[in-house]
Image 1 (cartoon, rainbow, N blue to C red):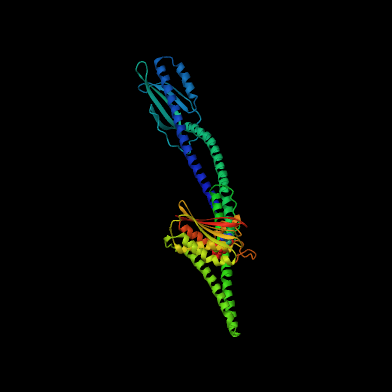
Image 2: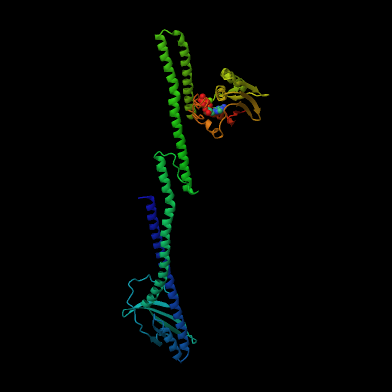
Length: 469
Ligand SMILES: Nc1ncnc2c1ncn2[C@@H]1O[C@H](COP(=O)(O)OP(=O)(O)OP(=O)(O)O)[C@@H](O)[C@H]1O
Ligand SMILES: [Mg+2]
């Protein structure tokens, strides 16, 4: 059963239970209020009778008392009224035989009689009678007893009809409230479950592998948040999937091409040996060496990344001199720069203090940034500046190369990312692994520093490495 059906059933059961409890409480309270009203009324009748009896015992003329008696007897529940003296001698009595309804099937809980007078229930020829009497003293200090007999069946009938009337209005209101509750339940479940269904459907589609699918975010509530969280998750999955794709194609391309190169060279060597052309062998050995170095670099980078990601890369902190490190890196690329006809210079600012860091790792960073600048510059120059700013030591590498399109500056620090990778006409596109800047950024951040880039396509780029002084 779906959660929606369960919720609807739960709400209906809850509404029914609440209605039943309310109906029960209403009936009980209403009955006790009706019965206390009825008691009050009966007591008032008895007290009025007592006044009449008192007056009557003081005067010999009984005719006005009769008039009162007749008035009392007009009340349907009153069967008999009488006034009597001390020894039970009846002064005046009147009786009215009103037709009695059949006895009530259900007896409501009897209510406590009023504190004034004597109240007792008796059966008189099948008719249940509530006998009430009260004593009073007349002007001659003689006791006069006023008695009223009520028909309990008629009292109950009257109470019952009042209860029916008020219950009818109560049940109409309760039914309207119940209907509104049901409608509200349906609306609420619809409002809640429509987005859940759309999220579930979206998650199913994404789960089936369509990572480009996005769940529409229609609100800012928890459902909207859930949908956008799932969309973010899909973004991450897409990223990971693209990365995996990149990784696989990088591995297949970048690992395969040097291996194929080595294989080809060794084939050629074998042929050269066969043809006794030993003189040409060193050239092939040189080529094999270059391919192996490239292969090794690639494998080193992969191992390094796996170390970084498993948190096993630790820094061997020492006092380092940035000028020395940069000088080493510049010298390493001098031949390459000269070969491309580029001017490569190192400009060291005033008073550069020593800093702490892992010299090998920092050299790796500078070598990659300077190497990139030489690699992606066809003509002009590459300048390396060492500067000290308050709190930071900065190595800035500026080139006059191809530059980086504005939308790509954040991407180049991602794993395996190379701009226009695979495009033959893009200079140096196929040469790298796309891991250098990713590793560099990680190393610099481990040192508490940062790496920034500014670039204008076609004009050149400037990479700045900041290290805490
Ligand atoms: N100075 C630069 N000028 C223009 N583009 C650059 C420059 N430096 C980096 N890039 C771009 O950023 C990409 C990523 O650089 P990164 O150093 O991570 O990789 P790579 O140099 O291609 O390979 P690797 O460093 O592993 O040999 C490069 O492929 C290039 O497209
Ligand atoms: Mg690089």
